[in-house]
Amino acid sequence: MALTVLINGAKGRMGQALAAAAPEFGVTIGAAVDQGDDLGARLSACDVAIDFSSHAATRPFLEAAVAQRKPVVIGTTGHAAAEKAALLALARQVPCVWAGNFSVGVNLLFALVRRAARTLGADYDAEVIEMHHRFKKDAPSGTAARLLEIILEERKLDAAALRHGREGITGERTPTEVGVHALRGGDVIGDHTVLFAALGERVELTHKASDRAIFARGALRAAQWVVGQPPGVYDMQDVLGLK
Image 1 (cartoon, rainbow, N blue to C red):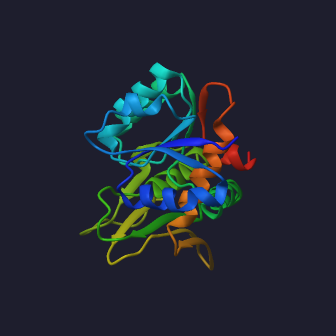
Image 2 (image 1 turned 90 degrees about the horizontal axis):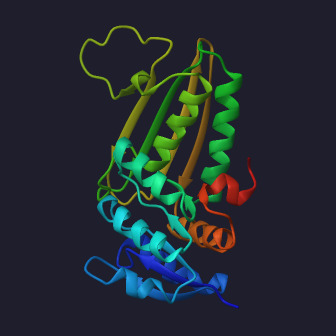
């Protein structure tokens, strides 16, 4: 039986990419929802809901899904830390895949960065550089935020270690800081580089996206996987068996 999916944020770039990729996965788009539409009424006829809208729309989306016990896939980014913590608590009531990036390649990058951060000591300075199109509203990107989380976790650091760009007389780089640099311009879909630099050598791990369809395919793969899973919050590492 074909999976019937609701897309929240259907008129956006990702919403359109999801609709275009659906036939490749044998998925039926049961509802295409945007701001002002009756989400609850449209959700009842669908097996799973995918959200690529705006951060302000995530709570009503989740509340509707929880009320109807529907599994969800969330790719929306830009939530403040406290807001996301509250939303994750809500999301745990249903099967939920929440990821900042649904690309298979990016999720392999996550695994490689974790291995590198674990292997390379504090004498390897860590910096994360990302670039996106001029229309992106949040910074750093959800993917960059996840890369930073991985580095902080492996190095036993908290968010106070992050340096969002540098300006003025900053002094020498400290061994515990992690640099973050967000570039915006043109129509770049998404480039991410994690750099580990020591005296005498450096390691660079890079992923570049050239087609938004990679994210849509990953999200649809996640939607197929999450149906039938027990309630809880998962990510693409779970979907791809990378953990």
